[in-house]
Image 1 (cartoon, rainbow over the protein chains, first blue to last red):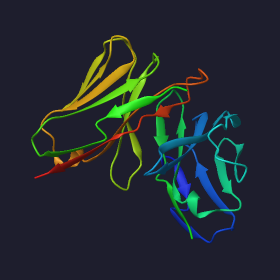
Image 2: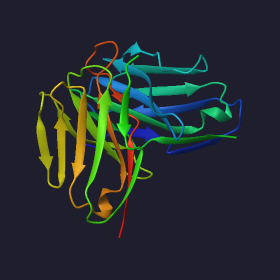
Image 3: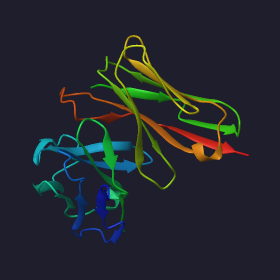
Image 4: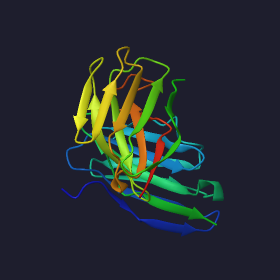
Length: 111
Length: 113
């Protein structure tokens, strides 16, 4: 089992550009989560999906953020336009029965 | 909304000393999970506690769930440098959907020789 796969591992982009983060969950897991981690705010849940359906997006900071899960094996988190305050590590995690398995994360730097 | 706090935020110990982190919730939890995140790494699941007063051990790590199911602790006996990292508790909150977790603030452990 390859685990949860995220890409890219690192992303540096200029303010105003669109950023797309990708995640492939563990096969058979029915829930997928997107988190953001910063020193100031810790680990924050942005959105999660159950059986590919968005259940709770109350953590999405604003309309610049959007997430999709077109099928059980792929999800994206998009930021458009990006801002320097979006700089953080973004984690994707998947789960089947409560226990969550995290990907290695994408470190995003917006300059 | 629900809050979960961990104390201390940071602890620095010498190798061989014991370490304890505490997790406190403002509401009763159906279960609680613990995760460890190494520096530069991602959170990794350690354990889940479900029953009131439950105690589980993993080698030098002892996890406890409070009788009222509102608090939990993680105790490490005789710390080693491999224990360095941030320890998070996490529990289901909010909508009642079991699959959603809210993570605590974390306790960062530093171990020196």
